[in-house]
Image (cartoon, rainbow, N blue to C red):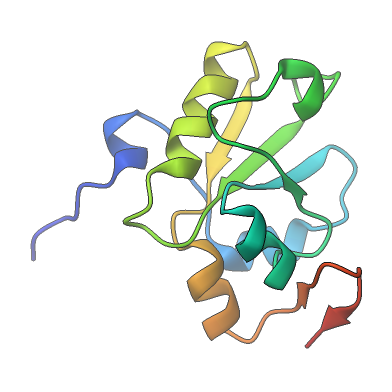
Length: 123
């Protein structure tokens, strides 16, 4: 069996599963960051996720604590936005940076809850 090389792996970043993200949502210092388009974020995102442009954000927009756990995601494993944003965060000195390579696509396929623009959660 051939191992798929993702942008996440090429950048030397750690991956995190949707199951682990779902389990840890709401923990202090656990921050989910959506790097999809604004339109996609408005339609659906991981509950509590922040939306950031992968190439245009400051360290202050991520967290004031460089030890917080930052989880970046975009649409799926073929999307490079989240790995790019995560690499930037790591280069800014954040210590616990992860990419949910499966993205919002697998999150929703598993039936996990999402938020929509008005803040209402769905199951």
